[in-house]
Structures are given as structure tokens and as C-alpha cells.
Length: 278
Image (tube, rainbow, N blue to C red; front, side, top):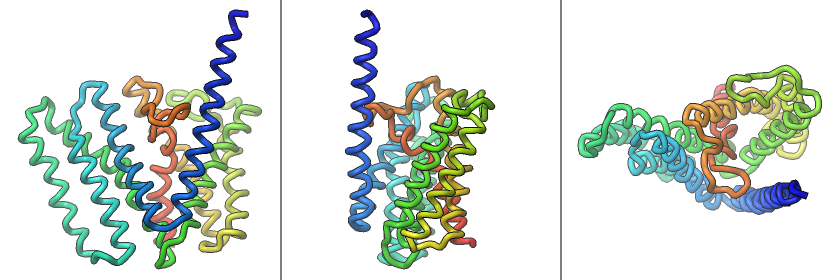
């Protein structure tokens, strides 16, 4: 009998996780699919929340990143690249970024915090880690010269397939630890299962999402298989170094923004480089 409340609590947590996942997934898919403006609002919001969450984690350990400067810079970078894709601003506007970045240094002169250069470094890391990655999403959205949801949605499906394949195969057959120091639950068998699932979904994406061809989708699947896992490991490394279980509590049953989008944060720059260079 004493185990019953625990089982009930676990069931309630699972139900909450499923309901929040379904509602969040519907909102996420709808915003990407509807048009470029809902896409921009969604990821600009995630950029702000993600940077803020990163800084909150650091604050717990006594660091003092500049919240305002980092959030403004990360948001400005996203908006600028989005407007470049719309051809509202000219590429020469990018030259405004380096001087703006140095305002982080100038602002630290007036903050009167300890370890000023540590604060500057952590402010810029947060801005680049979250804002720099999400700012490249508009490039994927406008690969055809106009907004199309296919590459962004396809990337999310590949991440989901890789995560799901890794989870189920790893849980069933996993024996050999992939990176026990950082994430004891991950196995090589799980990684192979995730890679296979991503490649399989990549094939079907080439049939139904024809903005890209088969080789491009398979290339993205390989990137997701490798760098998606590394993104997860990097976020685990961050949490272990700061001695926290989750990056935040914003999403009930799912943790924080960084917990949900750790793979996306790392894969996006590599996908953009792959599609632009090859």
C-alpha cells in the first residue's frame, strides 16, 4: 500500500508530460507551418527564454552575466538575420554587430561586479550558444528565396526520430556506454538505433518534403545523428558542472528550454554549413 501514492504521482507526472508535449507540439508545428511571422515570433521568444535560462543557471553558482546585454544582443542577431532573408535590410548591416558586441565590455565598467571578464565571457557564451544557433534558423526557412516550413519541420522530425530510436533501442539492447562520465544512460547501441531511425525518416522526407533532395535529407540525418547527441551531451556537461538536474522548470514535466532544444542548438549551424557549402 505505501507504494500506491508514488505510483499515482508517477502516473500524474507522465500524464502531465504527455499533455504538455501534445499542446506544445501543436503550437510549435502550427507556428512554423502558418507563415514566416509566426515562425519568427516563436523562435525569437525561444531565443530570449533560452538565453535567460542559461544566465539563470550561471547565477545559481554565483556568476553575474549581463542578462540585458546578452538578451538584447541575441535577439538583435535573430531579428537582423531574419530581416536579411526578407531583404528588408542589406547584408552590410552585419557590420553593425561587432561594435554592438563590445558594448558588453563597456557595460561591465559600470556594473561593479566581481570577476568582470568572467562575466563578459559568460554573457557572450550565452548569447552565442543559444542566440547564435537560433539566429541561423531563418536561413533554413528561406533556402528557396521565400519562406518554406519544410526544412525546419524536417529537421525537428529527424531530431525526434533520432531521440526516439536511441531511447527504444538503447533501453532494449543497450550495454556499451557511450559517454558514462557525462551521460551514463546513453549507449552505443542506442546511438546506432537513433542513427538508423534518422536515416529512415530522412528517406521519407525526401519523398514528401521536396524542398531538398534525397542526398541532402540523408546528409542532414547524419548531422542530426552525430551532432544532436553531442548537443545533448554538451547540455548534460553544463548541468553537471553547475550541479543541477534540469536547465529550468518552464515546461512542466519536460524541464527547461535548453533541456528540450539542446540537440537543435548544436545541429542548426552544421546543417546551414552543409546546405550552403555543398
